[in-house]
Length: 341
Image (cartoon, rainbow, N blue to C red; front, side, top):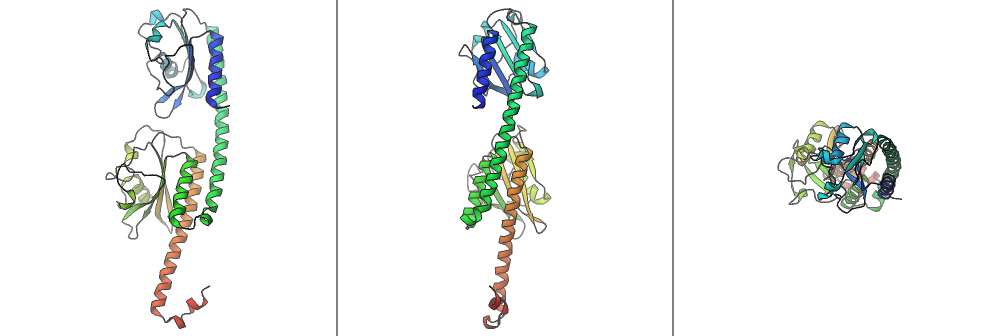
């Protein structure tokens, strides 16, 4: 059964147990802090799911102070808002009760159109429902984490066989970026490589366009510019997650590149022969959590791509050396070419 369906069933039970008018559940949201995740109501005026928590509302006070709260006569609290109705429906509400979830996971709140509807005993029962929801969400997260690990493993297996199925570099890279972006949950994945002089870098491939306008592959970016340039200079990865500020992420390729407003970014250096020769980048337009399993998965992808690029470089240099030998010595007496198999 999907998570939302389970939560709505629990909220409907809570509503029936307390003979409430509306029950709401607030959970963490990377962009706003907390947002309305689910609700069950006998009316039609509740805010849509995803609406950010109003910190000065009663639900906001419950989460902000991390303490339970109940009010049995809302007429005496005329200046206080509930924060989860879209119309003046809350003017009809006479009583409110809410309790925070453990581990700062949010709050469950409910209201009634009857005064003196709730007691301290009711608040204890509501806290037990809150603990049940917290335990259920923790179990779902564990199951989801195991599912993601399986997705990562299957993607790595497919990538291992990708070179055989897509021997051409461009097709290989397009498939790798698309598959890795899909498994990681990031909206964009792209690869930059350093030029032969080591003075600039450019976008070699992308799962989908990263610039608002123009072709990113036709531009050379000075080494050291933007977050990607910093990785080339320092040989260190960058992780930006759920920080709610797009200022740093928008300078991904430097001030001259008008990239999309990415809130979450991962930049991984591809290092071989003691130098960063490429940077593998994952970016998302919304805030996204970056856990250790995701990091391990992307590090393995970057190591796989590093080995591939190093082999390409060695083959290119070997071809240049063969060409030079052919020009220096006659083909008949060239032992390298004769013994080459």
